[in-house]
Length: 143
Image (cartoon, rainbow, N blue to C red; front, side):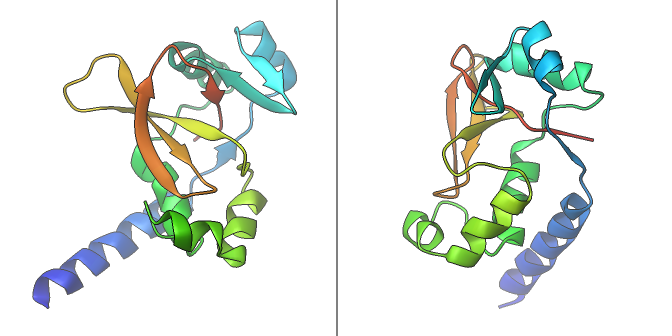
């Protein structure tokens, strides 16, 4: 019981810390001038290019924890696909914050022990997973 309370307190502290994050959507010009491509108004690129685009936007790629805190602060449960896809409050919350339900987003967090794999987060299902850094995913920066 004590362990559960400590974990809950730690989660609340992390959520409140990340709740103040300012999410920055790269502009069309910053995206394309730095090697990204626009797809339905969303900037996409490989991981290294995504880092460059965020830097050019005066921001940085968010960590995996910053991205997953959006899931939990919106009422989702990390890695609980069925709960998240059927939770309409959760679905509308992350979309109001600027994330799409059709895209996975880059984080700055590398997979432990893998030099070419980095965490991505999919908000529709509410999960994070590792993927190759040369793939193209969506970019939303943070400062």
